[in-house]
Amino acid sequence: ALEARVQAAVEAALRRFSGRLTRVEVHLGDQSAARSRGADKRCAMEARPAGRQPVAATHQARTLEEAYEGAAKKLRALLDTDFGRADDAKGARSIRHDPLP
Image (cartoon, rainbow, N blue to C red; front, side):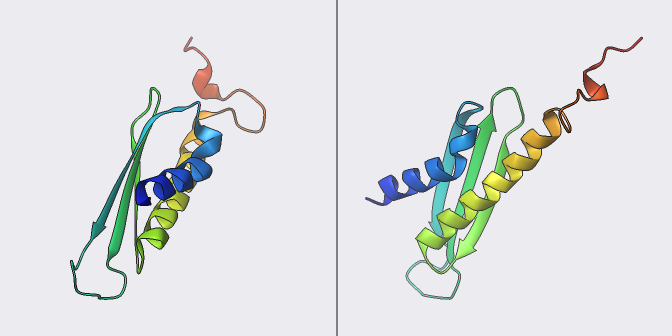
């Protein structure tokens, strides 16, 4: 059940990048084992954009749900930035795409 909830949250958060990602890995952990000590649940996510370097985000929270949702939100923001820089700026071609003389 947890795996299905995590998968649904990740797919919803990263839906707009679905054609540009080859894989997303999710790692959940409990930093303090059985003891409850505040924000001790941790989620690390790594996305692998096709032809680009992997991007990773982590989030710590009181519950696993907050941890994986927070990590998905951070990963979406990182991918927005990463793909935004790679794409054309303001509808025009970047000078980075022009061949050298």
